[in-house]
Length: 171
Image 1 (cartoon, rainbow, N blue to C red):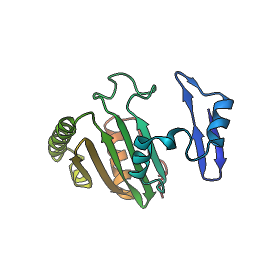
Image 2 (image 1 turned 60 degrees about the vertical axis):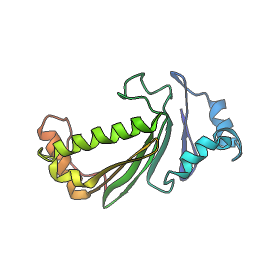
Image 3 (image 1 turned 135 degrees about the horizontal axis):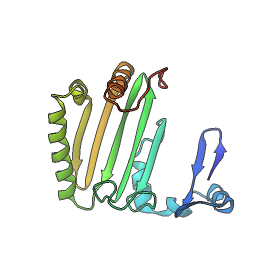
Image 4 (image 1 turned 45 degrees about the horizontal axis):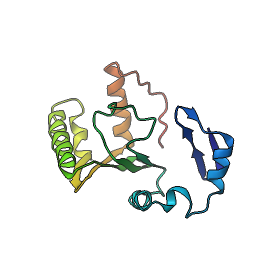
């Protein structure tokens, strides 16, 4: 269930497997800044690390009910990030792992996979992706120009990826 709070804000809520009721949505909209999640130091630290002025931003707890157990291939404490749209797409996604060693391992594995992609049809795009870690946090940065996105989508379509390019949604 969702509700528009104002002309720039939408709130989406889910309660377990079902959508949240109208009363839960109204309570969330009426909450004061120090109520609920904003009273959590952990949550506010994640929000502070997120560009909330971006076109799309998110904060997700690793144990959220909509994340299938083991479905992500790794256990994580939280994921947060932002995506900017304009003449292309750019952004940062951060994943907070349970330990610093797991964060380091994810980055090492990711860099190895990116290195292998250099020899694929997507190789020229690898330079637009960065991976790093600091303590328990994995950071993934990306920046693609509009033409690159259209070319990648076309390549995916030609490989049977099911993408169709008629008019680019990003302008």
